[in-house]
Image 1 (cartoon, helix red, strand yellow):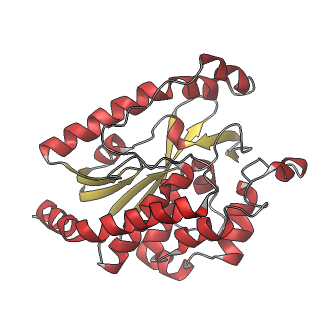
Image 2: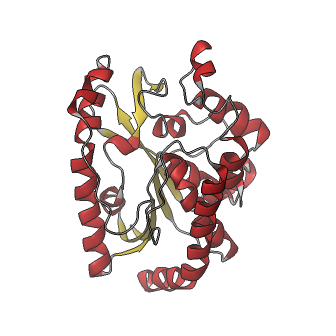
Length: 285
């Protein structure tokens, strides 16, 4: 059982908002015994546990327009348009490395869960990595958007982005034993996900369950928002989300927009840090 957990939505480059919130949390010594992240949320979770202040900000702001990060040229080299091989390789380990020693120490007193989608079953799977020193394929899988990445093979099964089937894993945090949770979203209050064109399913002939998940994602997502809102109302969740629509895409490359989104998250994180600490303290009583 955990008194309180941290739940981090993904959202691609939009999740730089969460990076700002978590940097503010680090400055205010806000910690959690359990953190679950999906897609970019799992990357934010990892840097947060390692205490790498500013790392997620720098990864995005400094390299989002690097052709090795994403671009057509990556396809010619056997990578996806979004080159997760480079992002979770040279970028994450050599250029802007995680504080591995701090992560190894802090993971002794906290739990990290990363969500990915099993391409065979079309269901979410939950990984609990204890080390990032081996490249952590589970983290890479959690962020592997279908259609623009090659996915990640784990145990002979191809995995893709966890946000396809569990975009806001609050229920899983409760299932794992969290009594309460702080939830950081990357969409504003009142947001409703619209359906995509059903023909999009045809793109994923090799992975039909992934195609189904893409087409049905809006149903799952909007139900999860309902759960978040209910938990917020009954006091089992404290929710932090953008105060207005961010007006940006998953693969946003405009660094001025991304910087503004980060600063919004950082500002809100500072404003609500004490409230979060009190929420955690109450959950521990």
